[in-house]
Length: 302
Image 1 (spheres, rainbow, N blue to C red):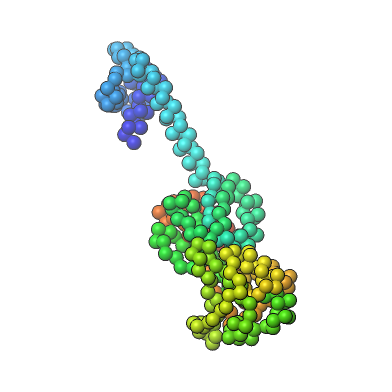
Image 2: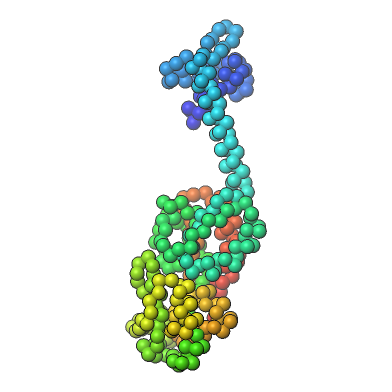
């Protein structure tokens, strides 16, 4: 900052061709201006001004330096003005990471956000890859499961419930399971996490306690939530999917739920963003918008 201050003194002195004029413009004394110019010349190892009792004039080296410094200070002023403008109103690019299946949750609320904040550019990565929020430059991520990064501030967004689903055609042909112990007799469509290669657990409960030794056979393994959904709708077996993924299919009766009384395990979505950064207006309005829309799903699904 001292260096920038010295450059500002030099530029103003060069523009006014006077220490007195520069002092008046900057609110300093003429002696302070002279000392600042002297320190700058000593640091650069060149004389910037020809001095006389009446005026000062730039040397050839001083003229070259003056043109560059004036441009630097103008660019700095522009940058400061742009920053002031950006923190005064929601605008700019917002990088967000959301689980692949989250598009079914997120897409319905995007039009209203875009209408309210047209100057915010949304850059959304729908992926199950566990991104490094800070190192990869994301403004915010939406995630479910355990939260382990202490560098992130977390706020609960909404809850969801997993459902066992199959098509009417499948259940008409294979029967409806009445107890989790019936699952080994059925075709089970298992989702595999692309990031780890692990199969998703089917977590069911009975009498308020989770069934710890639930045996789920695997008729088909799929590395995509959307593919698992399509396979279930196509009558290829029973799938274990979040309610927001199967909601449309259930409304159109292309999927039916099974073992509803045992299927009581909930999950949560969280919003996470760097805790060591100032929350710019573009991120603040995004967080508030999601809380005001998707946050309504916070009531337990039934």
